[in-house]
Length: 458
Image (cartoon, rainbow, N blue to C red; front, side, top):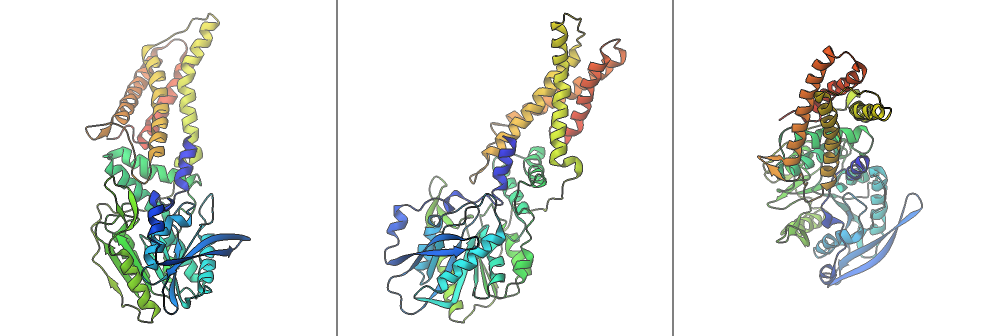
């Protein structure tokens, strides 16, 4: 179960809003009135063919600029970006939305090859200006687009929507910290469910592309770039991303911020769910900029004032050997064996009708030690499994801390006290010292383990 939850997070280098992968409904279909839609096939590396749809104004006059839509994380279908395709087509563009290649783990290089192939199909499409075909990508697409642009000089421009400019591991950790803060989780538990979690997942190889560095591809760009961010984005740090682009991109760069917009740059409904309506002004910003670039009038470099961020992202250091996946798994096993051995040996001796020496501190230590270890593991997995685009569920809160977490901390404290008392009893014990010694060893190991995972920290 624990490995499954980590793998879920690994499959989402950046947790995207569900609206990006939902199938467009009748409202999206109705809004396509006045547009033409043409189904196309996109041959991609590996002998596969991806299905796509080209949207264009029905009464367009003359060749149109082209825009290929690049998905965010997950195995997105073209329906997930239908609202963007329709909105951008209404701005006088020929827009290609295609089904993303299904992958168990993201492969930015392979996805970039697909983008290049899709751009080639759009350039050859009737009514499209082949010299004015660019790419738009949201979220994870912001890592993929620059790679594709470096492989094809025919990509005329890039539109980066909510694009991360740091590594996936760093961005995802920032994303989780925002979720925890929104849920009211602070202190040691916040570090446990963010820094510790993602370092462990990365060390276990469950976070594909975790250390991808976007800087080389961004710095190598030779075509104009438009970057659009929402000031209320909690999944990608907008101010940091824009600042990194300004430091890195040497071609004409336009950075725009949409006040009040979230990660998907779509409108929220009254329940806080993302709709199929783009945030006001977003489509117009993209359309105006693309049309200008297509006519050779590239807008001069410009950047809107950056919003304030409530928190700054931080890079995670590599795990030390004792923090590694095998080491942590081994510690869990040792703790359970040493704590469970005490009652198991006692039960075996009773079956054989042998005298069993039992001390109250030892009995408490064996009981609370097992409960603390299993309880922590279960709670950790449950909270991680609850994380989605809307947030995370730590359970009922008391005085700013999750009740279950407080209970685990109490168990951890009792375990340490019982360890000390059992160690004192061991000094004067005349028999059964081996069994007590094994139990005390588990208690001694429990101290650094519980400190590392925050059980004994405020």
